Length: 463
Ligand SMILES: C[S@@+](CC[C@H](N)C(=O)[O-])C[C@H]1O[C@@H](n2cnc3c(N)ncnc32)[C@H](O)[C@@H]1O
Image (cartoon, rainbow, N blue to C red; front, side, top):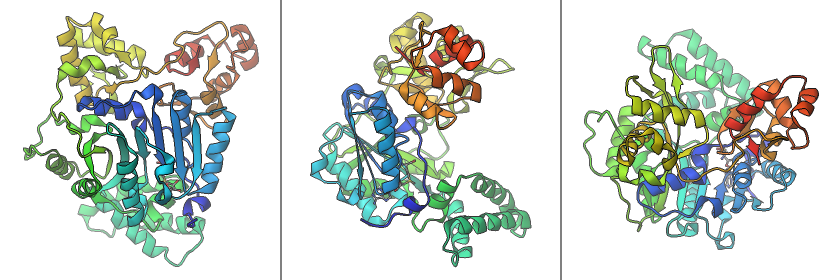
């Protein structure tokens, strides 16, 4: 097996809800596909690392069969430990090179490769697309993230300078230290022309905030190859795959009709938008080339989806949802719908549950389509099961308890991260279903009622 730098500098992974089969199926359904039911599907994650994403997917979809593969043997050993401690029998974790993934792996309805395409050499990039073409069934969907030009140019410039500056240092920790010191000199030295300074300050600040794993593998590792979107889709097409959409589907809609983007061809249109947005990263979904897609979805399709959005009322009366998108006050029907979404968030609400807040199904469909297209809300297809009330002896998911014993970030039932403070982490770890509220108060040293209600709302409890 090839040497892998991820064995020497670990790259901790975490749940990414944009990679979840629910998201892939939602975007596929939006554009006219008939993806496999999420509750019982077959999932492959390539480059799954220490399992921070793939193991929670397997935990949340017990009727599904999940496979994770990664070249880093230490990372796979950690993922296997996590899966074993959670008693998962629906996951297979393979220490291996993606170039060796062949027919013996079987077919997968959903293939995920986050942080792999730009981070591996050209032959492995080819192999990644070859796997998607060979291992996806007709209605299968692949998620591939990659760095993109034009936005990534600035980071590439810094990366090249840091790699040159530290080229004689072999030790990873020492090399990162020297690279960070170089970034300080670059930002503080102010020798660059004034037009560069703001950009350099912002970019070096972002780099200096990074943890060792991503700084090393994203910015100092020998391979990190961004591409233009049109190059990526041409590469996919050469393997019999076509562009389905973005995992963040709202980015495909352009409510402001950005000047100059008149192209009807979806590839050309997305490429032009990348130029205007100086986009540096994409999370693209692919499907087989032969699939006929409906590129012009409308609100009539909305009754098939569930929707999720926080709804934070701001001081001026505006309501903020996801991606910083705000709506103005003064529209009672819209505010009722958004309020219901906010009360349920992060758990998604089915279309029918929102009907009481609208004047009729068509009006509701129009509003929800507008909310999801703008990025205020997300589309879902899967109703993530969890316990939404506080039972006599509350039980948190085994996954959240496992995570709470190791970090402050736990996963909700819908694969979203939930950040907890120390007291809440202590309480959550105690929620194995054996204690009533009095027992919990004794064990954790405070009245747990408020926190338990919040845990139920956040999708951390199970029935
Ligand atoms: C940048 S990390 C991304 C990890 C994770 N998917 C995430 O996004 O958090 C890249 C991962 O790909 C794995 N990898 C690199 N080359 C590989 C190969 N040829 N076959 C399988 N895995 C590989 C690395 O070991 C590492 O875990």
